[in-house]
View 1 (tube, one colour):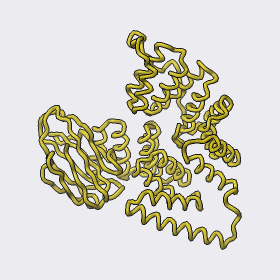
View 2: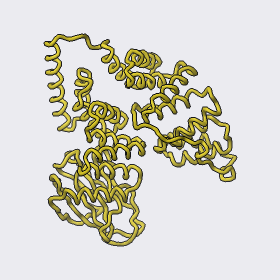
View 3: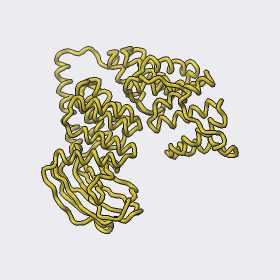
View 4: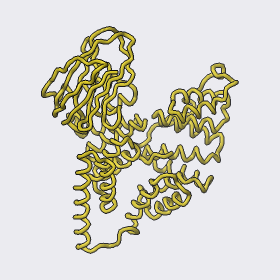
Length: 436
């Protein structure tokens, strides 16, 4: 596991009997389903991988390895309950299966079930004293519980074992701050100097962020966090920078810290919700969206968040409905563009709370891709059918903050309307609209 995140409390009781299986008669006994499942998993074809590993466990219900692999697939598909159930079954079959303990412990950790997570990480380390990930993960639990000295020891062990990521080093630096190993007791003069240094770093980071130098912004925000590990602004904007670079694991880590520092700050839950959804943790994402809405029920970000989650879940129609509610709520100006064609891109100059519309003729069965691209603004798009009903929508499905409705099949002949507006990542700037 390479994600360094935490999530909501797990309250569901897992029933192994609830795990679906495939009848052996549906699975070709001449095929190596485990090998094919691994290839599909590596390629990111998780639905196909699920079918393969389900056949594998149906044909060999005593294979701990196959149950562990199917658990990995369920995890990638965002079904935490079934993933935990499969990891548990793997452990039931082979009580010495260290990897399954670590994998299950990670999911407990993402659900804030720290007691269960710690038990599993301890078991993994007892069974395999060289499992770097288990040490790093146990260190995260120890740190959350205030056992910074133990966390430092675990992170150092993970680094010694060659954990192939800089996260362990970052986690170590944070734990060292809490043990006063990295930060000596300072005089009031030193404190004043540090505050000024943090402010200067944040000002430079904000400038980099505004000009979309996100890598540079991340470096500066990180320097500020080392000096002030509870700086909410630094975590918020560094997390946003990671989002634009599609590094959602890192973004989620930052939004977790933001929620920890400001538990009543609705933006923390909106941002964490989308990051979780990008990582396939849909149940947790929806829970965060609900928390944010309770904190600020009338904010348009509720539409953006729910629409983004729907789009990531593949429900583009619901995404379109949510984004239409957004545009209906804040629209101050409607601008009609020329018709959209496959030969020429449309360009527009987005302004705050503007909605642009364009039309094109579609034929039943056509497969189309629509994108709205900008280096300045943050596009949102909605596709309406001939009756004006939303049938698809997207916010950040393309590169960076670009919107993308990808390979959508036109349901019937007619005139279709595309609506274009913006989200919170930028409301001013040139956009290009493409129909392919």
